[in-house]
Length: 475
Image (cartoon, rainbow, N blue to C red):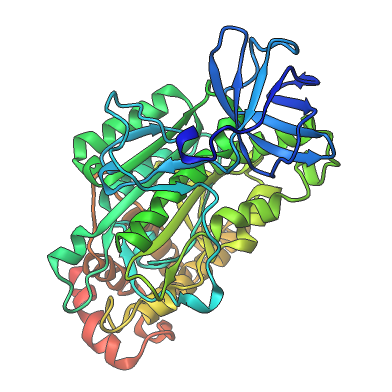
């Protein structure tokens, strides 16, 4: 690390105060915010940290590995004169790293002369390119009704006990570039995934690693793991280290990169812990007032730029405490990102996987990434009709809970059958089922054929003639 920064940085013997993972260093000279430090204990063991706050004659330092074993008099702090840099290289795909970018798989440090600041570089808004090409995940509820577009930020809202880990692993295994006309195999091979896990248990980390190895997906995945027993402070660096590699692959190597984070709630908990130790005035539920800008500093490192043919797409996964979508973490995430995929506990309890709740889910960029030349000309109308029909199903179910299903009209009973089929045939699919977009659209039309043609007000007559009869014949 030190060879990347200014040599002969300031060194201070002894610290003023130690509190949790925080050191208060007194007597420091000209120190910069976010500067990297080397903290040496009485046994000459070195751990890294960074400057959180600077003032006249003092600096507040957070130590990534924690302060266990440090003493006030026996601790030396050396300021290295610059921010944290990590090595970045295309050869990091297929490797597993810790939250600071150090190898966890027993392999050597990446052989590269390219190092990048984990804070990234701001993207000029005028240099951004509007996202228009879709990513196929093989999951109908996403591809068909909440399409993911290259360069989009599309979070996944989940809860404790809901299988979001399995869904994240399936997306990583199955995600490919959309295949518009003229797509070549070489373009498909320029697709990479950067996966970052924060505060996960060992069995969860093993699940992800084994899943990627067994499916062969690990060859195009770079994993950054911060485990539950790792220092919480390291979680603040993990997503930024992952994004730094993603930016290199996308904007220097011209690759299309999908970044998956799990679990952003653990990241925010670590941020709250540091904020409380520093004595900052808390905001909602004890989180710091700058939670919005801190999340935005990561989410906005996404998109496409004019100077590169690559792209960065983000799927941050976060668990909602008590399934509360108004909790500060999902609430602020929803403001920053372009939609959300919401997982339903009730669907999960019914054995439906993935338990994606279609009605509160949304992809704001979907309309620009689908249609003729990208997916299919009828995709937009079909998705709107499925959404409208399923929304009506909820009204019919509410009515049936009052008067009984047997008292419903014949049409309402058709809607009930459609609703059950929609959940069990369209939303529900196996962990290993990788549906093409054509398969997803075909299932949608087959389900719509359960309803009378006059109920299909969101699709055109030509589309009904072309696809409705085929679906009706399937039933």
